Length: 202
Image 1 (tube, rainbow, N blue to C red):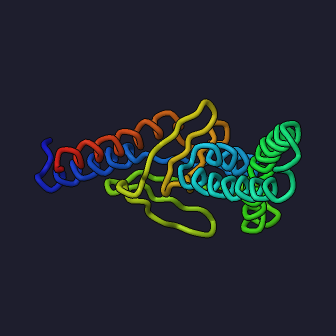
Image 2 (tube, rainbow, N blue to C red):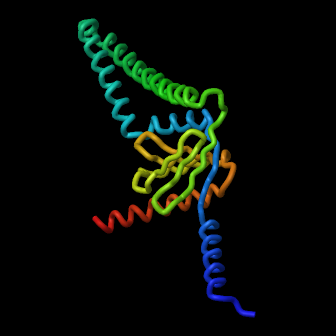
Image 3 (cartoon, rainbow, N blue to C red):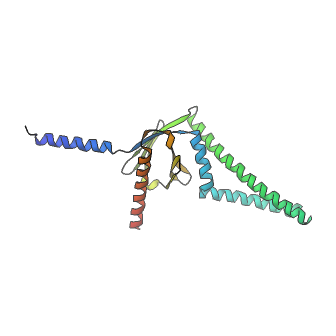
């Protein structure tokens, strides 16, 4: 007994639907304070935006120390000058170290203020034709492919940057559903294809 045209159409539609559902790429993972701490430390030393701010602060500190030297020690000989230079360098190193710690501490503090008593936040990312749908218990948003600045993949984490100092933090060990490797590769391919098209158009 053969099948009717209507049955064939329904069968084809079901097959298309099954294939489309099978190819939906998603990833569910948890984010903790440790992830925020690691990212803050990573971005502090690599962000051009933060680097400019650090250099500005250090330059102001150096100018202040120079003015103090001329006001207090310029007539006290070579030994006083060398001592002041060494003290200034050590002070700059300590200042940058404290600023680094302060930045990480503030990032973690903001995370705890947002998350409250929860130890982690669960998020799900879904790849679409136009970008990545990101959803958690509180928010749901779409990140366009053109809005992804870059992707930094480390041994244990991947950072999908949506601004120069903001990123989606995906820890390999924190994935609860989905294929980490396949998802990251798919995102990289989409971003790479977009870059190629942009260069071609230019």
